[in-house]
Length: 132
Image (tube, rainbow, N blue to C red; front, side, top):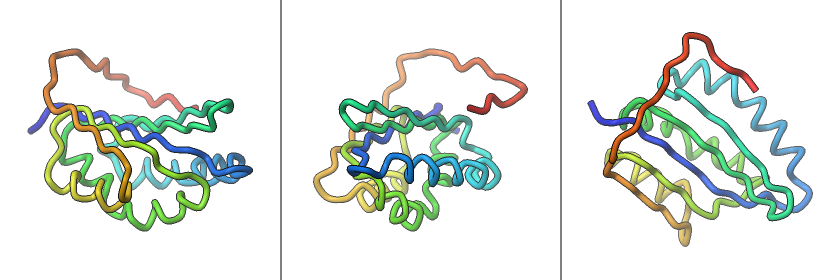
């Protein structure tokens, strides 16, 4: 079993697409929560001045990240109607599958940063989910 993985995708929201993206994203959350139990957290943040959207996901291990990425090509096609990826960051040691998927999903010219070596830290577990 590997260490936890933090996956961050940075995106630019296409002009006039924020509300459509927000609805699409909110509609996708129940399905992700039900079908991807290894996704411990998924949070999105938007900065209006720069039109930057950041999505942060937390996984207990590299295998859970792999499971999250299954079907990502199809899901990304829909999301890319509203957003354009600018960078991807992976904190922790992903499997080769995740790295290959990042090349496909992120696209050419998108920076994929991998920070594999954990220095330490903690995750405080909660019994109940926090929904935003």
